[in-house]
Image (cartoon, rainbow, N blue to C red):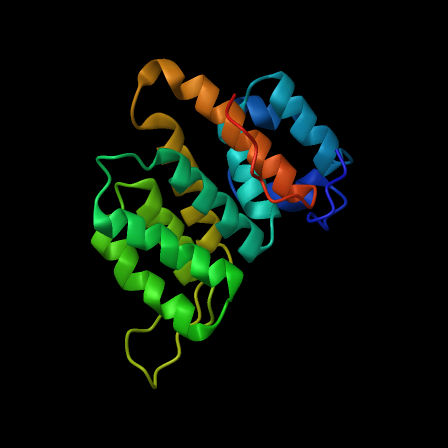
Length: 192
């Protein structure tokens, strides 16, 4: 793996930002590189830790783009207009990360609901900005890791909601998309 978007040289620099599951903890050594750690997680099919690792390792725009891909993967003909709008606004922020595009994602996330992957994708865009205050003249900076928590929510929900027999397949696709993004790609990998 050539992880051009991940700047840390040790996996432990990233895993210090979140809590690993027991399986991931057993694979972590002080000196293991992000690529080798991700490979070990893949070999063990430890998708829970891999999703978290990627969400915290990727820069905000790339991580949010991954959340958008996960959300798009989860949309279907029963998806509401609010869900469609939420993912479109999150994507708009990825393409053009202006404060205006960022602010628009907050209401969209609320309208789509945080029980949906698209709601969390929109929240990831909102939490990637510089101000989460609803009051225009009051600046409240989001915690540095909020966007990553939202990305984890989007990807996990996209994997586990729907057909139970396809969960493993969804994890495989979405983690490959995340790895592709971490390697400088656009994450658009066919599900076939």
